[in-house]
Amino acid sequence: MADFPEKEALYFLPLGGTGEIGMNLNLYGHDGAWLMVDLGVTFGDERVPGVDLVMPDPAFIEARRKDLVGLILTHAHEDHLGAVPYLWDRLGCPVYATAFTASLLRRKLEEVGLLGKVPIHEVDLSGSFSVGPFEIELVTLTHSIPEPNALIIKTPMGTVLHTGDWKLDPEPLLGDNFDEARLRRLADEDVLAMVCDSTNALVEGESGSESGVQQGLLRLISGLDQRVAVGCFASNVARLHSLGQVARKTGRRVALVGRSLHRMVEAAQETGYLLDFPNTVDEREVGYLPRSEVMLICTGSQGEARSALARIARKEHAHVKLEAGDAVVFSSRIIPGNEVSIFSLQNLLALDGVEVYTDDDHPIHVSGHPAREELTQMYHWVRPRIAIPVHGEPRMLQEHAQLARECQVPESIISANGDLIRLAPGPAEIVSQVPSGRLALDGQKVRPIDSEVLRSRVRMLHNGSAGVTLVIDEDGELLADPVISCHGLLDEEEQEANMEDVADYIERQIASLRKSERRDDAIVTETARVALRRSFKRLTGRKPVTQVHVIRLE
Image 1 (cartoon, helix red, strand yellow):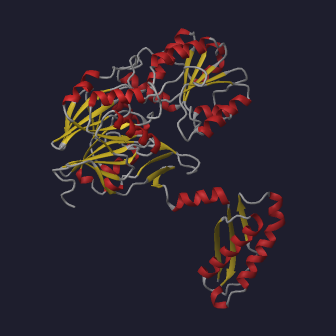
Image 2 (tube, one colour):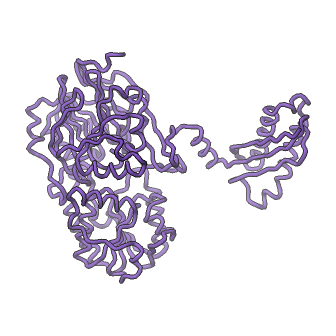
């Protein structure tokens, strides 16, 4: 398909972030070119032990990288730009972002040795520019981070509004307000499609304003006379601004606990935000300050095992400790899927006598995403012909599509990652499916999430592992007793009672082989592996991951 995407067609292709929340990767295709919008991550969980980050697999566009004209980042949240340092080498395209997003991206690129290698083009707020056959205009919106942008993507086949993440906050406290006038004018510009955030499509009403959160935090923290730690998203710069104001009004010194918080504040101040943020104290000094004069702002509001708040709760943090009577304020929402880790963290704190406060009882958080009234307002302003819900789980997408129909949008498409949607010409429809998948950042290596390495790790997690070392001569006769090891299968006392029997069974199975078979390392290895696995199945009811080491002495 050398002429794909055709000059007389416009396509939309999500490879991440549709049917799920996180790791957004979207493509627009027209006139032989592809435009990428966002390239994000999500965080690993118990299904992928040892994995910190998960990202979309860009194999489809990687195979067409010569046709990829650019990557536009709508804003600086991890689920929209976090994969750039790990996947850019596979793409090699220019990156377009506003100043704050570019500043944060440069810091992330520096950590992986790509600073100066990735061509970053800074674009102005409300700016216009061309990327290949696509004409782009930014529209300023409000969100929980500075400089969130919707994209007006113009082609001869039609105009698309790609909203990115947004809300309609009448008092955003930080950065410009949403550009209502520009959004209203879109109604007269015959917008073909709106590709829109679905995160809160199930939530009635409005998302609420950051100004209300600041007042709620002030009321809560002004009534506390102990040390206070606040867990929040490091990327919620508006919340950092609110916490800085609350700390100043309540006479508290601020300490940032977590590297990403320092990086976020530095990027914000470099680009003109948080200039009135209080001077911070080093986390190593907070133990010397009166408890009533301390506010710790910590990463880890989602219970992430390696975050600052989790390490503090486990008493593993090198410099920060909480004691009975201290308070932890969770100024964040529970992201679906994180319930177990968050509640475990809160229970661990409670067991130590730490008071825990959440938005269940206090107005200390609002979402950065549009609730139903805001979605309805956006549809009334823009009046697209096609609604394409993204950035949400399947039920959210379905509810969003139904809301769009109620707003008199003629067509709506519920899609999934890998669905190739032709927007024009003709009625919008899914015309094909392309490969889509996930990659995992496993230590320093990016590998497919279904790789044998990760599958083996999961099997070991659930079934344990066992190994045997055999020392044999050239005829396959054992020169020593088999040496058995196991992990996650037997207690120490059980090992002492059973390892001799396991070794005897393996020895008998090898002795039962013909002499010619005992001379074949592959046959000896497989015989020992089967015997080892059967032994532990009999002892434990589990089928462990097994390893056999054959040492043949001549």
